[in-house]
Length: 365
Image 1 (tube, rainbow, N blue to C red):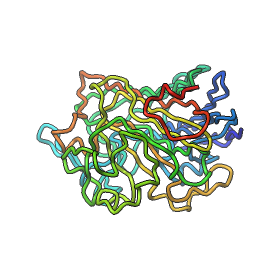
Image 2: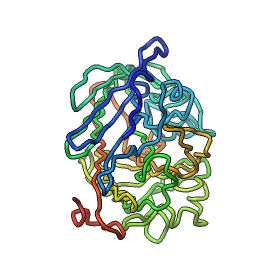
Image 3: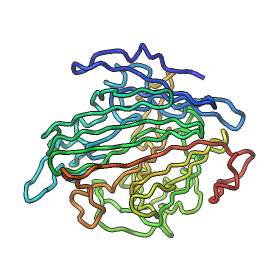
């Protein structure tokens, strides 16, 4: 088990101290989190032989995080995912955001929450809580928004992430956690053998600029259908227009769940290690991203090279471009409301061999 050194994260960035906090449960699961972008740096879980390994991509120093891949393990906001042409209208006023992804604003703009230093407000044996004040006009968004993020590591091998936000002006908010997972171990090849189930029978198709058209389409009969287990590599290179646009999977699924209820969104299984990860969320959507733009230029922890499709992301969220799509669930937050959402990444192992069963109770250890 290889941990990142806490002293490698002690620095001052934009006048605020950065650091690294380590949580560990009774099973040996370890999570390391930096307050720079509230990022998950290390996530160590056992495999079917009880061998511990780190399953998230990342770096070993704060300097590498500042200068490297900005979204590794990050909290993304104010608005996770894409907003078309970097603009939206609230009560007749048009707001303009920095464009940083083709013609779109991605993950809050050029300096979203992933690039900000959070304040650590509480540290316990099993949890750490941080907050960040995003001032009125930051990255073009209206209102002073205070975001609180709490990471809780349970003895059930769950990493629970709770978000709470308030604003003094009506604004758009969509917060997502963005770990890059490889359940075989970070830097141990690609994720093409990972098997996946998504609890969603519909998705939001995108145009060539990766912005949803506003339609909600069934996944049945397409490579987007993960209602039954499929490996990532099985169809990722199919000549299907949606996959061609994105160089693979980079899409939002409409989850089959009640509004605001914490429920299972996805299950991912890596057959060699036996590791299984469940994703539970209160949010209505789940973005699957298969590391299509990783190109081997990122050198991560232990000197490992992060190549194409060396990780996958399962980001619970509201739908992309919701501020410009009134037919999607609203992301507006008003001054008399409190934004509250939860995401849980839960880990266990599957003994033996064979494909992932849809009924997870059949193989939990």
